[in-house]
Image 1 (cartoon, rainbow, N blue to C red):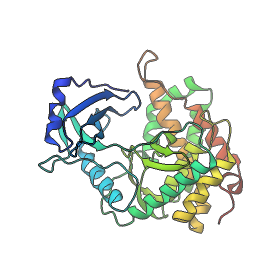
Image 2 (tube, one colour):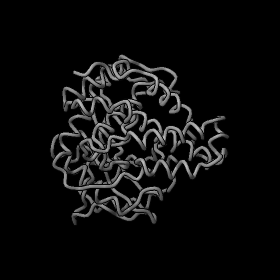
Image 3 (cartoon, rainbow, N blue to C red):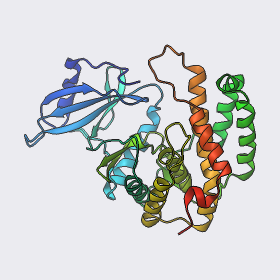
Image 4 (cartoon, rainbow, N blue to C red):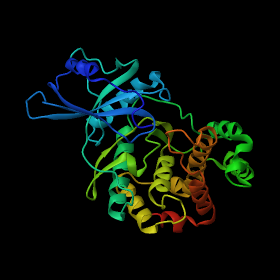
Length: 326
């Protein structure tokens, strides 16, 4: 999406509601598919300069969910997690309206998103995810996961015959996997608020260390170990899903286990959770692939990259994919 809502310079006068000092510069950020984002530089309250992210929420984000995200990031930040907090204006308000869209000013965190993670970077990310889960244990807020097992069925139904336009036999493979997950999904495992979308582009790295976890707009209450499985699929394969990087997986798992730990039941369920995570992203990508015109400005993501992950998790042993249980 990049910047969908254009903000004229005169509209940025609303930044005067905050204590960040006069505006110096504002620039649209090309990355991102859910919202319109601007990088904002001000003089800072102390005159030493300050940087923020201005986010305008587009139609795919439910405004009713925003208080949950505000409370979650405040909670995680207070417990030492490296997350961007929402900035309150002088009247204590977080949510604003700008150019007809709900908008927020958000703390800027420095770092870069990597495209080819190293084992050391994966280890730091696993540790940061474990810290997040520990911090979320006493968070009172809840949010249902609209992209859980029931949501997968809805997406599959919506895709219909379109699956086989992507690849012959894909529809039958999806139906087969849904039947398997219906019968084996480990719903009894411990739940907490999870990130649910911790791809490398949602982790800001400073060398081998995590500088920040960002983009919490898929966060929800679900199986805690499912978050580990989502992150494993996002970090431990080549982008096309054709290559599995065992050394990156070993780093990720080691970092998480050191920071939080996995129960025997969680470890045993990881292959099923990972199959579910792979199907979830296959389905959302397939839906977008089928329903997004090729001429649209949004770049469609290949659903088959997650079919390859799904087949790898189906065929691979737990020890090969996740390492021996610590």
